[in-house]
Image 1 (tube, rainbow, N blue to C red):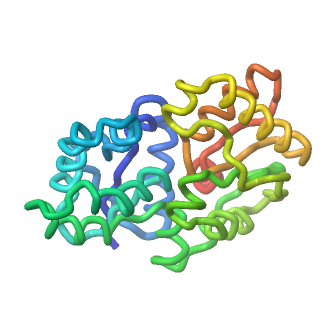
Image 2 (image 1 turned 30 degrees about the vertical axis):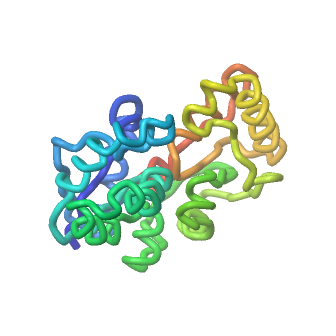
Length: 239
């Protein structure tokens, strides 16, 4: 199957190795990956900051960058959830409305695409260690993602998955929330860090690099040795 790959702007700028691992995973699953080099952002940062009219130009560019019929796969439930749930509000009764339904119906978060669209749960990955999984707020509440990442991780040879306490509680990042309410954000991240440490895991895995960026920063300040990894980094391991 041919897919169009959307890499979130922060992953492109800060975690390019993870982006390349996404390509490896999709190719391992039998996909031909197409990457439009003119892509930028889905528009979520501006929208969430309250600049909704300004975000339209970025969102409009996404609609044109990802035309066609191939599924649009992204390693971010946050971006996928935003496109699916909020583009309709932005472009209601506009000239883009016709294009909107076609594009949003083709947007998939990576693990949802693998498990529910391709029917793939075992990619032959091997990763030694004990891991705990963090449910991002956007993934869980906006994209309704929960079991798919866990099904994939349970099939990774050598990996032991342990659930942490309050695993569905927010890590405190929340985009601009972490900037506007730093003390609260750090306290929430600290709680998440401690819950992860209590499992005895040596790595924390999630589908959203934004959460991992925040949690890893808190863990570094706490002197924790737990590694924060995007699920694509784990699924690409061993081949």
